[in-house]
Every structure is written in structure tokens, then in C-alpha cells.
Amino acid sequence: MKKVEAIVRDEKLSVAKEALKALGVAGMTVTEVKGHGTQKGITEVYRGRQYAVDLLPKIKIEAVVDDKDVKKVTDAICEVSRTGSIGDGKIFVSSVDEIIRIRTGETGEKAI
Amino acid sequence: MSRISYVFILMFVLMAISSQTAWAQDGLDTGDNAWILTSSALVLLMTPGLAFFYGGMSSVKNINNMIMMVFLCMCLASVQWVFWGYSLSFSEGNWMIGGLSTVGLHGITPESLSGTISEYTFVAFQATFAIITVGLILGAVEGRMKFGACALFIPLWATAVYDPVCHWVWGGGWAGNIGILDFAGGTVVHINSGAAALALCLVLGRRKAANIRPPANVPMIALGAGLLWFGWFGFNAGSELAADGRAAFAWVVTNTCTATAAFTWVVCEWLHRGKPTLLGLASGAVAGLVAITPASGFVGPLGSIQIGIMAGVGCYFASVKMKAALGYDDALDVVGVHGIGGTIGAFATGLYCTKMVMGPDGVDGFFIGWGAEGITQLGKQCIGFLSTWAYAFVATLAVAYVVKATVGLRTTEEQENTGLDLALHGEAGYCLETAPVGNLKS
Image 1 (cartoon, chains in turn brown, yellow):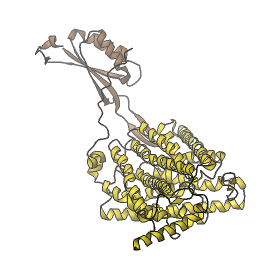
Image 2 (image 1 turned 90 degrees about the vertical axis):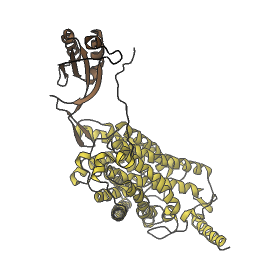
Image 3 (image 1 turned 60 degrees about the vertical axis):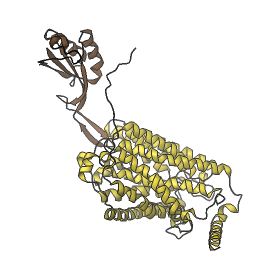
Image 4 (image 1 turned 180 degrees about the vertical axis):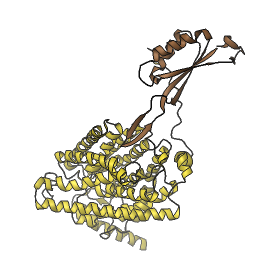
């Protein structure tokens, strides 16, 4: 079981969500996050006063999937979320020790 | 018995004052009275409009505090006006300040007249000017003034600064008597509040750099500017104190100048910074409204366009460049927009005023008549704005130090870091649930 954490542009949420649904990913958690990587941020000017905004809003999609599905899922997210410009985001994949469905008490892959 | 005779004497004084203008003529004009009552409501709406304008520009953690301070002016300046503000401004006094004959609106009855309108209509109309003038100052103090200090500052400032300057210009004081032109309050309202804002923010001191934040809500600024633009028709066209052609004229030049200044400000920042902003559009509109205020009953439509250009360029650079160069922390640019805009308007009144609008007793400004008359008028206008800047600045310093010595002026650093909304009021401006994860179903 792997957790896929994809940080994408906020306008890419809906296409990424549809792509995951098409692959049969059962559930996901979506969070509004702020951060920066290579993209250095932007400058906002209000009445001539400049504010450096170096933490930019992004969307984080978290989904836990079977080991065998990881490649499909990450490829799909990359494909729909890529614009080719700096700021497209990143995907982190990590191992998940255990999953427990609270309602039934099921554990492991059955609970995905 | 003595009370009745006292009232009788007061009535007699009032009759003596008003008989020169109204009672000798034909009494109350219902059309005029209806328009000025309407204008009073329009001008009152400018204060909540100003609260939104300033609130939107405040930091997200001080937005309630800013809106509440401006609203507080409606509470405290309204009552001060009835107690003694109206009397100090408009009852018979000396060159400097009015007397105490109408304290508590004593002796004014529903039958009392001021010109062709009820005196109560005049009281109401002028009250709304006093309220917004105090409110304008408070844009300078974003995020660092004690609320109690604000509550004390409002009535003290209205008494020590607004009432005398109002009397100078409109209540029979020296400025009106020597022929300084101020139709709707370029000196009384805008230079007065701009100079006061400079004094108050100097006494308060600068904000910590970390507490200087981007505007919390730019659309709210646009809402406030819209309400100000709307209410300003009462301010300027109402200042004719009659429902006549000159009032309509003031309406047209007000709209024209504002439209020009709003666009000019945007063009300035577009050329200077590369991007046109909504904040700039809203700021330019207010700058135009300010600049046309003293001129609105005196200048022609083409003059008003030129004043609009001067206001757009002048207030933009005053807010963006002058503030940074001089280093005072006037948070929301009261000095740049109201002080400088009012000064531009007061000066330009001497350039563009015309007998076409003012009638045969009027003056042709320097750019209209190119004569000595225009130069004399320009000189008077300069005396008017210089003395208002000087008096308002010095008297506000005095008021600020009185407040500082009694209840204290500035919030603690910890309160400022937390934000005044939570630290002083215990309520947050925004409690939003943000989960925009739904899609529109097609």
C-alpha cells in the first residue's frame, strides 16, 4: 500500500480528480496548501507598496492505492497536471503501514 | 418665567440671524427642504461606505477594528454635534469660532428656518459632514490605536478642530468673510482630515514592518468607493442648499471629475508599475471626489475634467512616492488622497471658477479670465489651504497628546502582533470554511 501525495496547481484539481476516478481510485483527501519549490513566488503591489508573496497556493491530493496501481496513478496525475512551466508541482510516494476502516474495522488492502 | 424669557431672547437672536437670508424672503421651500433631507441621508451613507473602503484596505487581522472605529464616528460625532458641535460651528460667534447660543440645539424649533430650508434640515446635513471628517482621519491609524483612545479622540477632535474650521469657512468666520471659496468642504473636510491624519500618525508612530500587510479584501474597497461616489452627490450637489440648477451642475461636475481621476490614477500606475489595479481605480475615484469638492459649485464641466487629471496624477504620486520619501506611516493614505486631493481642489478652484456657474457676483478664475481677479482669488485659496493645514496639524497634535496623556494612544506590541480584531474586540473578521472541491454539474 502506498500513499500518493500530489501537489498540483489549484486549477488542475478537477482534471486530476477525474483522472483518479477514471482509474478507479476509491477515495482521496484534498487540502489547500501553500508552499514553494523552484517557483520563487510573485510580487504584489498595492498603492506602490510591494509585498513579496513567496508561498503560493497549491492543492494537495492524497490517495492511498495498491502497490501495483502506483505507476498508473502517478502517470495519470503527471499527464493531466503538466503545463511545462515552473510551478507544476510534485508527487511524493510513501509506504503505508496500515489502513483501518473505522466503520467496519476492516484492515489492510480491503480497507483502501 | 425667566426660562420663557430666555427662550424668547434666543428665538429673537435666531430670527435676527436667519431673517437676513430667509425670513425676509418667502420662507420654507419644500423642494429645497426635501432635497437637502435626501442629501443628508446620502452623506450619512458615505461613512459606512468609508468604513468598507478602509476596512478592505486594512490587514486581515485589523479589519473589524477599522470598520468599527469609523462606525463609532457616527455614534459619537452625532451626539457631540447636538450637544455643542452645531453651536460652535454655526451659531453667531467671532471670526474664529461660533458661540454657545444653540447648545443642545436650544431654541431651534421645527419652524426655524435656515435659508429656504428648515434649520433642522441644515443641522442634519451639517452633522453628516462632521461625522465623516473625523472618520476620514482614522485611515491613518490602522492596526495600532487603542479603541478607548479613538472614543476620546473623536469628540475632542470634532470640538477642537472640526467645529472652528467649519465656522471659519461656512459659519461666518474669517475664511468665508474674505472670500475663500470652498463649496462643499475641500478645506473643512479634506485638508482638515488630511492634516489631522499626518499629525496623529506621527504621534502614534510607525507600525512594525511585519504588521504591514496587504489589503484584506479588495472587492470590499470597491464596494466602499461605490458607496462614497453615490453619497458624494449629496455632499456636493446638496451643498448648494437648494434644489436648483446649480445643484444639478455640481452633480455633473462631481461625476465628471471623479470619472476622470479614477481612470487617470489607473493610467498612472499602469505606466509606472505595469499593471492597472482595482485598488487604484477605487483610490482614484475617491481622489477625484475629494478634489472636486471645494470646486463643485464654482467650476465648469471642462474645468472639472482638468481637476480630475490633476487629482489622479497628484494623489497617485503623493500616495506612492511622497509617503515613502518622507517616511510617515499613514497606513491608508489619508494624507495622500484627502490632504493632497483637497489642496489640489482648493487651489484649482481659483484656477477654474467661473461666473458662468457662480453668477455675476462670482469670480472668474485665473485660467478662465486670465486677470488680476483670478490671481487675487488664487491668493485667497492659498491662504485658505495653508491656514487649514497649519491649524489642523497643530491642533490635532495637541488633541493627540491630551489623549496620550490620559487614556494612552497606542496598543501594545503584543496586541498589534495578534491583531486588534482579536486583541481588542475578541471577534475575527473572517470565519470562512474553505473547501472549494465541488464542480459545477453540466
